[in-house]
Structure formats: structure tokens, C-alpha cells
Image (cartoon, rainbow, N blue to C red; front, top):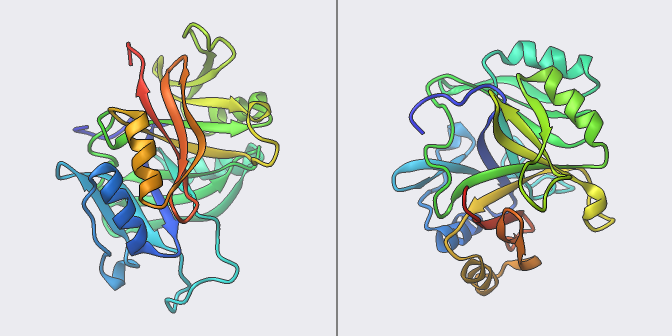
Length: 262
């Protein structure tokens, strides 16, 4: 990626964990990421890179004094959607029935961020780029390749995001996935919507992160060796071979070897 993401496009992901170093070690072993705990004045935020390009952030779940929160927040990957006007987007969030959880806040000269809950209670971030556009590599082994909203109310989700960002929605044209809904920016699919009825009953609305891998089965085995777990074993799907995994601290993510065309 060599420029800003179009508004409405997923542009960044980060993970909040109790043990930041353990997470850095796990994803380094799994995907080959490089990264280290950042300066204290930046909250210790770790920028993970692949081939020298930023691919994800990992931060410690901590109180302002550095202690662990009680109770601990869930360990989850957060998706950030690009916007060119975060103030206008946040006004639209509340007008459309969502909730502003944090922000907007300046992140040095890198940009402005906010975290919201949509009208179906799924949490997602917003990012207005400054000096930092987002992920520098996508659609390669170990990098972000897809983001997916899981919700019990697809119609409400479509209405919400279309009112907050310049997104449209449409049914997938992929054979075998005709009931799948896609978010589109300028006619190009950038994210999807999964109906919660297709997932286990205890799963709540959320955004899921997909990483491109050369071999789902190899990554699944490597995750288990490194202390992770398998939430859904490797299987063939219309979009390719996928598995849902979790890191040792419970952060869930999907790996996929896409079917052609990507």
C-alpha cells in the first residue's frame, strides 16, 4: 500500500492483551512479524512490521499507572475503518444509533482515532490518517487480507455503516456464498458481513480479522505448538481454505489461503 486508504476501507488492526511481550513472541513465531514494546510515553504501543512495513499493533491492557485492569478487558483484534473526517463520522455514529466509546483523540502526528459500537453492538475503530495511513502490506502471507462483521441484524448493520461512511452493501457474487453480504467502496468489496446464526450461540457481535497465509494447515499446527488453540479447524469455504484460531491469551483470528481469484 502506497497511499491513504479510501474512506470506509479497513486500514489497520491492533490487539490489546494482558501480556504484551508474550503476544509479540507468539505472532513473531507464527507470521514472522518484527516488533518490540514501545516507549512509555506512547503507552508502550508496539508497531509490528513485515518486510519492514507496518502490519498491526499490539498494546498492553493497562490502567494509566501501568497496573492491569480488574476485570481485564477481552483480548480481541480491533478493526479500524478509514475516514477523511472523524468528527463528521462520529456525529453520524450517534445519529444512526451507535455509541462513541473513546475519542476522537490525536495520536501524535500520525492521525486521529476513535472506537465506537455500531447499532448492533459490534465494536470497531475509526482512523483519520495524518502521517500514518495504516497497514503497509496486505494480501500477503502473514498480513491482513479481509475483515468481517458478525452480527445478528445484517439489515441494521448495512444501514448503520452506509450512513456513517461512504460504503455500499451488496450480496456476494461468489458461487456458494450468495447469502453473504459485502461492504463495497467505489464498487470494490472491502469487507463482509456474517450472520451470527451461522456461528456458535455464545458468540456476540464483533469484527473478525483474517490473515493471508500460504498454508492454513501449517499455520494451524504452528499456532497449537506455540500455545494457541483451534476454534474451527481448517476447512474448505467458497472463499478458500480457512481456520479460526486463538492466540494463548484468547485473541481470535481467521487465517485463509484464498481461492483464485482473490
